[in-house]
Image (cartoon, rainbow, N blue to C red):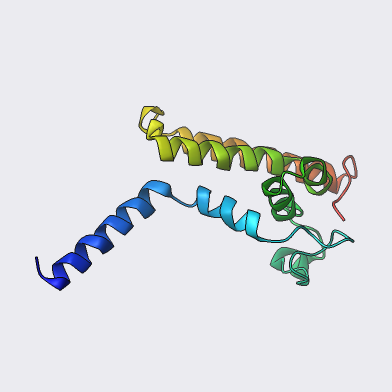
Length: 142
């Protein structure tokens, strides 16, 4: 086998693993590597708010606090995650479930549209939560 063929075989193996793993485990690893939100709770990595929706409208977006909540979950700080966005726990659980399903190969036993239905359900909950925040029924994150 030539060097180019060996390199191509390694690259193909890497791509197959990348497709098999997907984004979920990578998101969990990145969330675990990012430090917890600052003491005031308003920033990750000391960065300013990067939400384009909020910059344009002045209204926090439906996912406001979700990234900070998932980062807290990745650090096993579940009570802090609830403080930022309660649906962060659900998203974290979904990422863990997807990672386990993909790594074990059990994903093949799911119905064909399982991910689409789960995503649609999550987005529906996210929009409902946002409306309740807009109506001041639920508090905004810090």
